[in-house]
Length: 139
Image (cartoon, rainbow, N blue to C red; front, side):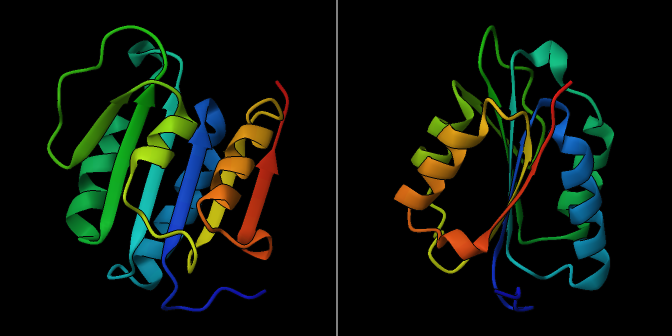
């Protein structure tokens, strides 16, 4: 199924899966910075966060972009304006959000180990399997 320009976009990154998601978000901001977009980025700890300097400009440039960072272990980092931090698993952060997944295209990048849990969560929450786009990699 082809993505329609008005469909909301959900981007989900596990760890360094943020790199391909970053490219997709940057492209979308250039094409249509008013589009409804959600970013969920799961990390093991706050020490694993990188590229924070790109998130604030994105939020400024794309007013309909919401960013949630799920931290699996340890303390949450100091709050940054426009970001939401979640203590726990990435799938739980997605479950507790209020996003409407039935009409969204979802782009997921991360390790093969995270894919079953994330894809099952998205389908449980209403995402159509044709609207899931997966980039899985091993280190």
